[in-house]
Picture 1 (cartoon, one colour):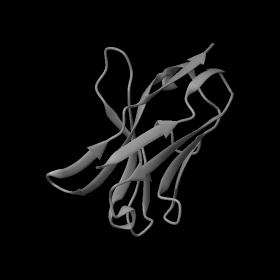
Picture 2 (tube, rainbow, N blue to C red):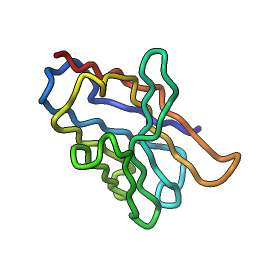
Picture 3 (cartoon, helix red, strand yellow):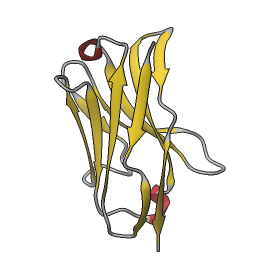
Length: 116
């Protein structure tokens, strides 16, 4: 079975940092594009950051320069280091694994709350 399990969410003050981790199992991790998405209350889910199987990275403009995505293929994990957090970063953050259309997996999500 496929599992993506996020950890590291929580409550943090504006300007603080959190590190999210996603542990994947049941997939050939190295073949997947991994990503972090978030959904704030009342808003659409948006892509935060992606890292391809080849290591190419893209960030949403809103987080560029503050967040860092990385993958460790030996550990089957993808992380999101979040620095200089803002209240508008408050959302449920979900881990995504994408191989191709029809082969997409999601984690359960982890809440990140940034207080002002």
